[in-house]
Structures are given as C-alpha cells and as structure tokens.
Image (cartoon, rainbow, N blue to C red; front, side, top):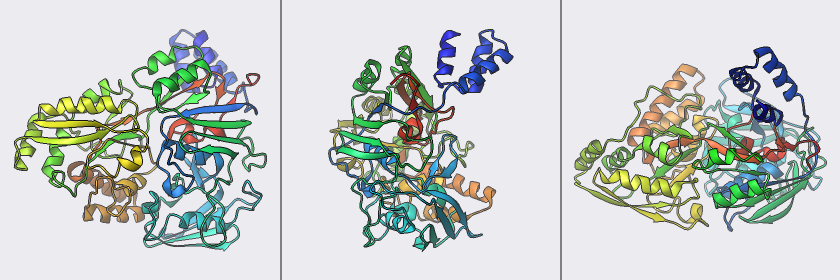
Length: 531
C-alpha cells in the first residue's frame, strides 16, 4: 500500500485506478477515495529547475524549417519554442492554443479562427493574423515539399480579415480542419513581411531557444512573457538526442535525464522496478509500418503485396518484439483508439499457405526481396525485421534484412528504398493519417499507392456531416488500404516513457505523441522542494 500511496502522491495514477487498486488491497472505498482526492490536491505546479529530456531520433541534417520536420527531435523541439493554432489537450480533446476560438460555415467550406490578443513572439513582435497566413502558406503551393502540404491540399485561400482574425477557404468542406491545425508542421513563426516566415527559432512558446545543435541538443530558457498562465514552469529545458535505448534508460536511472521517450518494451517492467524511476504507458495510434513501392516490381502486383502481408506472424511479433505492449495491426493505420475505427473488418492472420497461393497468382513459386531497417523507426525494429524474415520463410519468401545507418534514415532510406521499416506517430483523426500517408498526391505517400476511389472517398468524407455516412466511408477506406494498399501494418505500439520520481503532471496525459503530446516542457513541473 505504501508503494501505491507514493505513486498517487507522485501524481502518476488516476483517481479511479488508485481506488480500484487500493480496495483490492483491503482499503475501504471511502478511505481510498479520500486519499485519492487529497493526493490530487497535494501539489500545484511549481516553478524551477532544468528539465532534461532524452529523445530517440534526430539527425545532424535536422532544421528548424517546419516544412522539413520528420525526426522526433524536430517534432519535439517546436512544441517547446512555439505554438499551433489549436492543440490536443491532456484529455485528448481539441483545445485552443494560439487561437482562442474557431467556427465554420454550415458546409464546413470556410473556417474563421480568432487569435488570442496580447501575444508576442520572443523578439517582442506582436502575433497577428499575418503571421498565421505566412506560417500556413509556407506549406502550400505546387513547389512545396512539406510533409504537411497534403493536409492543406484543398485550401484555396488563407487571408487576414483583421489583425486577430484568419479565414481559411476550402474547395470542399472539411469538418476536421481545427484538428489539422494541431499538426506539428503548422507551428507559428513570424512573417518576414514578404509572404514567407522567419523560422530561425523565434517563436511564441514557453521557452526561448538559446542553443541548437541539429540532431544533438536544443536548450531553451523560460519565456517570462508566455501567454499561458501556470504553464512553462521549468527555468530551462534541455532536449538531447540519444539513439541508444540502453543509454536513455541508464540516463534516467542515474539522474542524467529527468525524462526519456521510447523505453524498450523488453526491459520496461525491469525499469519500473527502480524506485527512482516512474514508467508510464498509454495506448495510442502510433504504429509500425512496412511500405513497399507499388509502382516498381515486384510490389506493383497486388498478389505479391498480399503474399508479403500473409507472411507476417503479427501475434508472434507483438509478443516477441513488443512483449505485449501494443495491439495487432490489420494493414491499415486506423487504430482502435481513433474515431471511425471499424472493428468488423476481418483480422488478417499469419497464413503461409495463403501467401504461397498469392505468389502463384503472381506467377511465382518463390520471392526474394530486400528489406531496409533500423532502430530509428522504433526500439526493436531490427529484431522485428529478423522475426519477419523467419516467418516469411514458410511462405517461400526470402527477406534480405539490410540494417541501414541510423543518422539520415528518414532522408536516405524512407521514401527512397522500395521496401522499408517505418514508424508513424498517432494523429487525432483518420483524415489526417490517410491524407498524409495514403492520399495519392501526398509527399509522404511512402508506398507510392495510387487508388482513385480511395482519394475520392477521402475528399468526400471530409465534407460529410452525417456521422453514419462518414463512418461507412472510413470503413471502406480501411478495407481498401488493407487489401489493395502497399503497406503492412504489423502492430500499434503503446507509448512507454520514463521519468524521475520528482517529475509531476496532471492526472490525464495526451497520447497524441510521447510525453503528453510532446508538450511536457509546457505542461509538467518538478515537485516542490526537489530542485
């Protein structure tokens, strides 16, 4: 019971779970409820200290240009130094960020965003609608290479109605546009006055960028003029890129780091036994994927793609690689945590005989393919690839596993090699993940998959306001991706992170990304008297 009380006082267990576990130990429900309530009120956010975070993925080519964001290092950093128009809250709901409100026309064909007043960039410049227009237009246009460009593909105009009002017009309605504004590409930087932005690091956020070594370290100091009261409580935040999971876990155990993302599923339970460390886990839409270029042989044959899908033992991979810290995938990216996930779609299972049958339909008795992999997409990625190599043998498929260099994996391997291991972070809506990774013209359509019917459904579903019809459309899209698409989705991975015991946060944490949606620097704090 003492250990349970310590966790409750640490703020690392919610009221419901504390009461359930305490009553199981013989404590009365009333007493458990009283203690839970007192623990919840025991601390309010405290200021002070340097929050040191170890992230798992960064490259020496990383840039502050939001059009280039790909690595974890790049995704985490802007949440420290600047803001989006909207955010996913700790309760996993849509909430205001730099915008205070928004509304749509009845057909969702236009959206009006009202901006907070009195907000300033770190250099003292007032935040206005012109900055929003420039920040969003940075990802638009025929020549845009931004990964976020597909999310704005139906935008026809973005304009300032006044200093604190922005209007976004669309070709067709999109009920999810406020969710799209949470994407990590669409952060706010100051307009340069000529239609572009200054992305050198001057933002709106809770911390002012003091040091930036691409893919190595970023340091920010607290912004005394931050517009969110009670947030950004650390004196400074230091983000370090540490690819080796053993080094990350050792760092949080020895006090080198206060928090780390991506604990090893294999050792997470052992790590949790350390009294100086708290391990937290949350189910999300984060998933492993194996895109194959459907415009080159042999992956241009749907039967080859299906053979490769049936050659994977998903349940075995979940057990051997993730040690149960996740859920099996079904070759589409819509997780059980997302709205419009269709649980009625038949689960694809390991079937070497069916894989052989599909190879025969493709005119083959056997198949040999190269598969590029690394630990960069997720911890255990190489072990997973070797596991797939073994299960595929029974189907007559020879998978040649190629371990690629970790530095530059996203720029030199993903989107370049024809069959690779990838890892996708969660998105709050099906439209976002489909638009980014499966829509035909999308820059991050990493399987080069082209399906006109899918693209039509995607655009129609955005504008559909009848929830039942929308669900039917997303169900059909999941089936199309599963059966025709060029991506194997073996499993959805739980986020597992670890912190020092003096790190505090509210009862709920977002599963949008790791460490509370990558917003731990803004939302978390150190316990009183520990810094």
